[in-house]
Length: 77
Image (cartoon, rainbow, N blue to C red):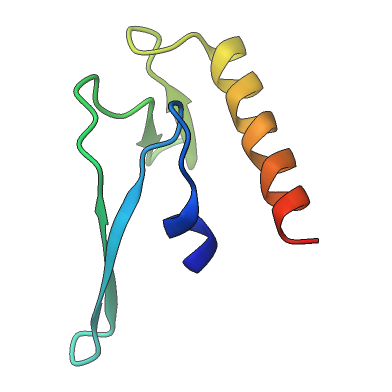
């Protein structure tokens, strides 16, 4: 969570705060507002995320996610 809170990049929605509901056994993530909304939605029937093409092209999203993973790998070394 600390790594996610420390990420600052124009293509990454920032995590602002983490709220722990110990009684209910849940974590709530307070995220930065993104005016274009989610880039993907969970498809319950297919059990996978599906990219919203009106927000971002799938190839562009794949490139962004690959860059994020590489950045996290570098940061955690």
